[in-house]
Length: 437
Picture 1 (spheres, rainbow, N blue to C red):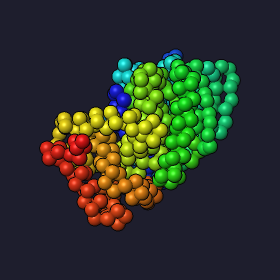
Picture 2 (picture 1 turned 180 degrees about the vertical axis):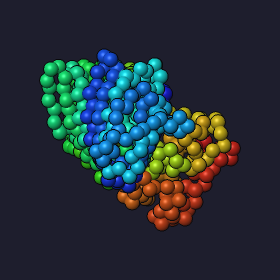
Picture 3 (picture 1 turned 90 degrees about the horizontal axis):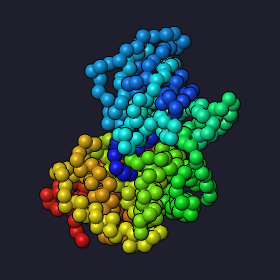
Picture 4 (picture 1 turned 60 degrees about the vertical axis):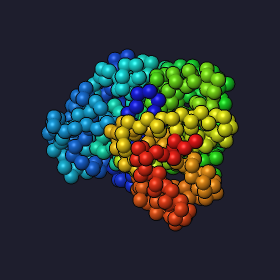
């Protein structure tokens, strides 16, 4: 996830060992009323407890065909990823099939009024884990899904799955989506006035409303080439069906849910007006693209630097190759300047989600570390190491700092392992490689 403005920090919400859990979601949404109504059937639920948006009213919970009691646990804490959620406790322990019927209005957007990350409104219906719009048992538990969504027919609908059916009747369009791989989030967007453009193989489709058409086409082609380049560097991406890049009409953060990428059209439109705007937008979108590879560690843990640092390094390298050294030099210079102003004494490899230096350490310092390693040890050695590292943990969330250092020792030698260890555990007060010009 690339932090743009307001940020609920999420990196990889979709990469843990596969589970048997399956969701069958049927949802009807009325953006004019800011309301959704849903029936969700979960096969092999992993718990009798789940998160759900606090403004939704549960009509029933049925476990293995029998109604069961449920209540809100007022003492349970929510997570940074689900700020408007409450914890629902059911008497369904050990159930094989759980059915939850609920509905309600999302009276305010998730995020802020100025930066509505998730929202139900005529101009922007955008739902993901942040809004707790479906029962969530775990932020990292993997599952498959079938999602059936009914919305007004004037809206274009997108989800992080494969579109398998679509029909329109009585002014509403129903789309049916199935997951292309196990996931840990279901993202659903419905936007008015959308233009679409597709190219490449695997295909890259870009969906937007207000971007200049020539800029959108160049970005589409650039990301198609970037996809090929990252595949050559690191191997086959986790999502093999191509990319869907959707520009949503709001400011705020950008995020990736394989094979969907959600981008702020407000920020992208403003960036395109700048002298270096084309390269800047390419850099930011490429960070989300790179998460199709770099989502191999568990989000919200000390190991999250692997996801974000490598995604940012990959994005900057792609930008450097496409637009030249001049496009990334000021970015790296700013990162070095930022590193002089750490707000904490946290090291890269021990930065908690709540750290004031989370973005600095995981995105900026970590990517600078990889650029320094590239200069010190060469592209060939670093690329081979990262390709092997990705290959060992693709499809899992098992990558961690200890495994990274161990493989660096095996693949690149003791000098490289010592280099990475020093930088990952260097306290800001000691000065960092990021500060070296």
